Image 1: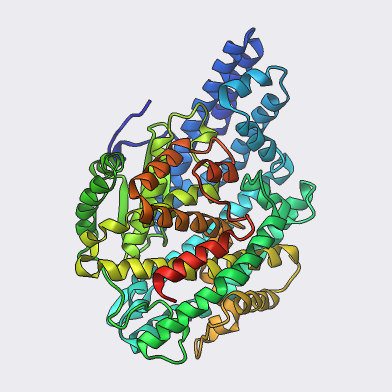
Image 2 (image 1 turned 90 degrees about the vertical axis):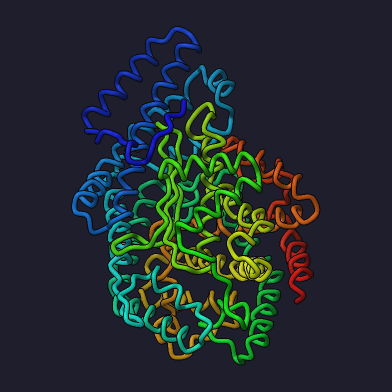
Length: 562
């Protein structure tokens, strides 16, 4: 049941560990005393409601910290959640073990589907009480990285900017301004490079230690299980990365060359790569409030259900879009299960990326809204790579309505957005390949890890030239990617989803209504199946299929004239 409320009214009581254990004891007693499948299912549903209450509190705690990392109360609550979370995981895993092994499992599978049991079978291999302290330490390291990134105060052009606020200058039409902005950005990372290396070194060693305690050879095995990847493994991903290198990297290189010619620049430097047009990148016609107002009509025109849902987000203040001091960088979508409400967090900075992020996170939010009625909470969100299909595809499906954001520059936006999607793929797999190298050699020194990054950057982005930007030239560019620190092994998911999103782009060009119908149906499925089953069910080709990337590349190259 949805309880639609303004964000200010969404609250969750801080749980005490003794109280949660008592709540679990009630569930276990009801389950043990049940004398029928129906009674046992009722106990499972009560357990799921308990999980919803806890997940709502965890989501609120994390969000409030991200909204202002300087807030002492929010930080203290985040620290408390870090300390209690491993114990909540222990209780949850214990219940999952019982359900997996129970004689009445066929009845449970009939009620909830078989896929949830595959997820739980993966989950129970990722936790043991022996790693409780390690999980708390990992959360604290992730918070330390977030605080460090949010602490940036970069003087530039008479302003004091955080990293998100500086971003608009890195795509300025004036080349000297772009270079100066990138120099200021990387100076922050150079100044904090040793601290960033220390945080990551601690993370790698900690995660490797957890993997060993759980019986894995290294963190790669544990990391894939933590991401609930049930239908592919590292070998599949390695073959996929090879396809990117052979089928996408040459196209990306041609795009960089074409941009250089259009801009009259040779060679193209790293600070030039984000420029898709001699006139400068298109910008939305107004600030965050203006974009919100335009979005109301964009989503209504695109698809009635999307339009109605956007109004729920907007009317109930379930959006935090503006950049401000102390706010964590990036963008994400979270949710409050007890209310059935998602929430969008972003940092608008006056660039075309504001629209990218808005449509992206709207895709996540709409999917969560559409699949809230799944029989058990594990199925409301799909696994990460499938979840990114919803977000990245909506970016493309909204293309016909970009005139509301960009006016006469809408066509330029569409071309640049498509080109940027292709250029992202080599970078995305480089981030993934780097992490596989790191966790395959956890004993490597920070200097050796910087060498690993130079190796993968050379393979997937051979055109990149850093010039006098010493820190990224020496292999430090990976430090700017939050996912490397806080979401290990996650980043490949974006590229897998991008390959699917490009298929939706192609389908929409042929029949926009058919593509939208397939998209809405995919969102409604939530996480009821693993990645490749969801892909096939939507009429898409798996990115792991031989030749899948080549076909996508050919269609994009034709559209962009390269």
